[in-house]
Length: 207
Image (cartoon, rainbow, N blue to C red; front, side):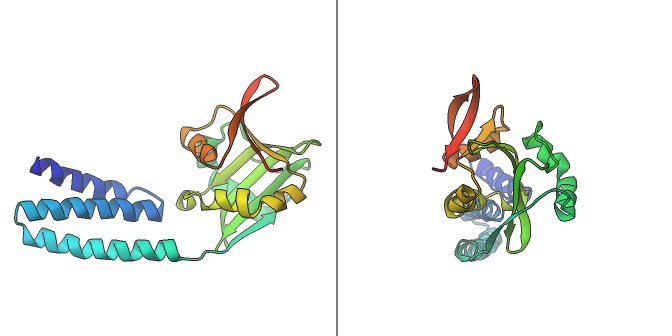
């Protein structure tokens, strides 16, 4: 059992190095340090115990800073032939297709589109077809890996909800099927399943 605890601690620390989210990285590191501290205490390995106590304090300090940091979010409406957006989409094209395999990567005249800046970094792009009834059928709602911590979703559908309504959006609609992690995200954001033209969709009403 003691040996398994050591393997578990190693696995947690190793896995933390491949996650892209800073908060997840710190939590995994904390769990790994706690496991190593327990392991070191049981086998009386003082260097292991000391090193991981120091790392635990560092991780807790950095995690508190992350939770207390006040980031600036900005929503900017974009239109066709926006070169910065085109470069952004081209750079992340492969990853975007993992989540929106059938999504249109080009902003067209009849589309509603915007980007979300997070501390002046383009963190999210949203492209949808907006019909005359205020239904925004999502083509892409893509957040870059580093910022997948639900903050942008909360910003869009809570703080900027009135802005979306002012632009004529009454409902945001996703067609199924969706990538598993993205489906979990939109459920957490309050989307519910509805039948639209005999097709199962995820819908969030803004009004």
